[in-house]
Image 1 (tube, rainbow, N blue to C red):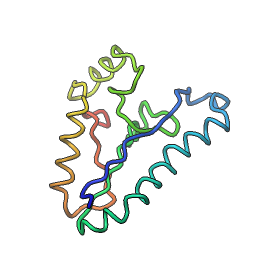
Image 2 (cartoon, rainbow, N blue to C red):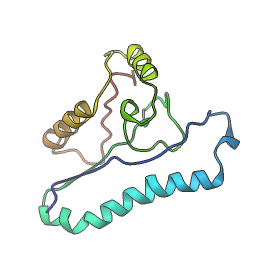
Image 3 (cartoon, rainbow, N blue to C red):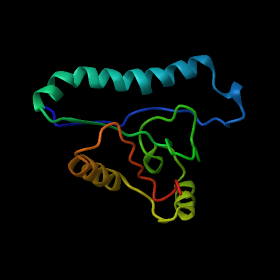
Length: 137
């Protein structure tokens, strides 16, 4: 039995929005395969265990999926900007400094927010909950 399934893995490639040639067809296909088919495949594989729960929740974490599109990379994948391997900590701090809450989120922040959503938003379905330190404002 699985009560909560969290999809949080994914990939992207940093490409300037105006540079349509900066992302090859092969890279585009790989990103779609990992981010879309991968998410679907995980949910499909866990479906029997989710159904046996009777009240299961599936959450998909997608960084960069802000309503404003700010800092959105084409086909943004899993992980959160602050914990992406190779992400420059100075860039993360600068982004946090420009957000209304002025905080750098860490994995525990995201986990606590997710737990709050899973346990408290019982009447929600297909809902986008933004955990971005107010960056969408």
